[in-house]
Length: 53
Image (spheres, rainbow, N blue to C red):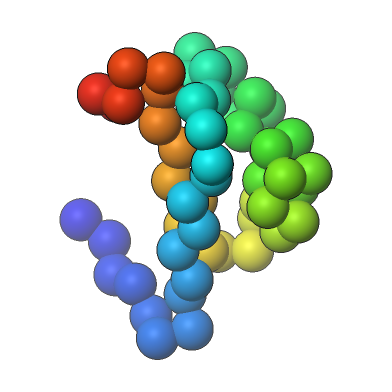
């Protein structure tokens, strides 16, 4: 479990994301689609096409 501070934002990525890519695969969508810094400390939520992961 981890703590979330008052300044921490939670972002939900639209659409399906290939969740097999690992950190490097998520870095691009966070930077390009969400226009955020992946190392900012905020939380970024992704889902696969079936919406079960």
